[in-house]
Image 1 (tube, rainbow, N blue to C red):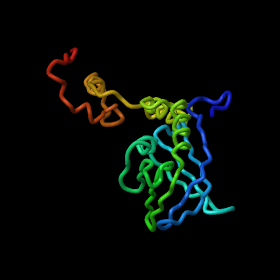
Image 2 (cartoon, rainbow, N blue to C red):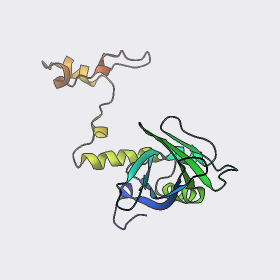
Image 3 (tube, rainbow, N blue to C red):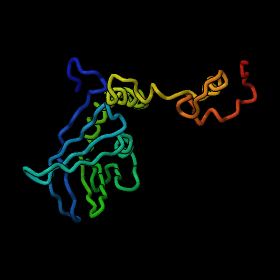
Image 4 (cartoon, rainbow, N blue to C red):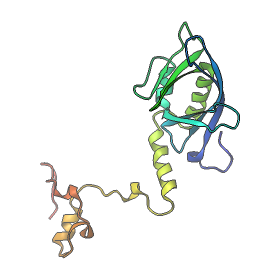
Length: 191
């Protein structure tokens, strides 16, 4: 939920969720948790959970798209997989988290996940994440020009400077590896 006066790229949300750890078939351990989202990191969601009062949070970060796809079909490979509700767990997603030493299967209420994803969609609509990621980079890099602004377009500018009488070479002369690429057949060199 966006606070008044905060740029949209700093907006985010956190939804409390009661998770059920499945240590073995038929056994369930309730764990409090939060699903978190920040527009500054628009592709990711975070799942925090606590093993008990005063315990340090265990935090997992994975793709928002992985969670959304998991509502409809099994998604993910590797450390995080998400499976949709089934006849065995009709109201829960199953999120499997694989660490270096252990694996945890968590049951997460599908209704809470749907609500959470709807809020994230209002903050950053699917397909527009790249816009927010660029803004976040600019915020992180501060008022100076960001990496995005400093990227030099490929072309012949470096060579033109060198031909114009510059005696410096390499990066000091504005040399860029792309300057070594020949122009395309339809390009005019403009002498």
